[in-house]
Length: 304
Image 1 (cartoon, helix red, strand yellow):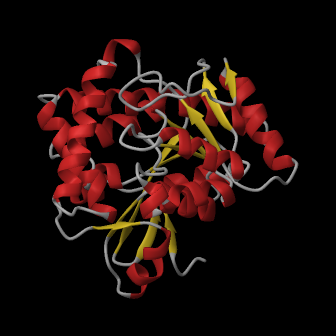
Image 2 (cartoon, helix red, strand yellow):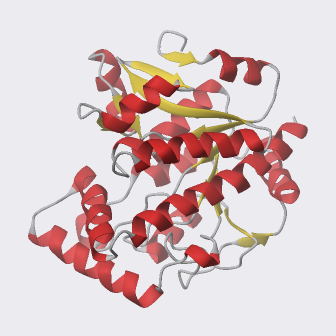
């Protein structure tokens, strides 16, 4: 594994000393937000993680090397470069063999975090079952990764461009606990409620850490989804955002946009339709996830 994986000195030291580490993805930097908001957000998230006593480990692939803990210069590169491939599980061997640069999705960030020994991962929203998947079979690799890789993922729910009901059904089938942090409702990224319930509502980082630890101590494979709603003051108006999402999906279908290109297209459309409000909401929910995820990581480290 050492031939493929490279840890920053800070991340490696924290793991050896069993201190809390929080994994962060790089797709949100290279494909999820425009410059300079992407770089500003990445740096601020790392700052938030540190402020709660954990060590941030932004994950990416540079010249074929899987890296946990990017430098400031590397973050700037991910924020501005145009040659970065969006990398999920299936892409990793091709990218490493060809010494390419890759931005990690939820699935590949989980894989690399697990390789490194990192147990907690903060992201914006997980992928899931796409609308119309009963015909297209368009299901994110994130869900299968959650079924098999032992990493706790803190998110603002599933992106509301997805079929959230089917996403939760898939996770239930795979035995993945879906936990609401201080909420009974599973959040829908831009909004605090999706109309679907989380499996359980958990009020404190301490209890959340115990639930996560107990799952893995019982040798139950796979990860945990922690739905952390966007702060109320940053929530978008549900009717308006859902209408905008419907319009975006129609445009994508009419334009033949499929696969990896769908999410970036939809996010860009929503940014325009909401006059930047969706981007602002996206940034705030990531900050909020970093706060909660860091607290959970600190409590989980105490149980080691």
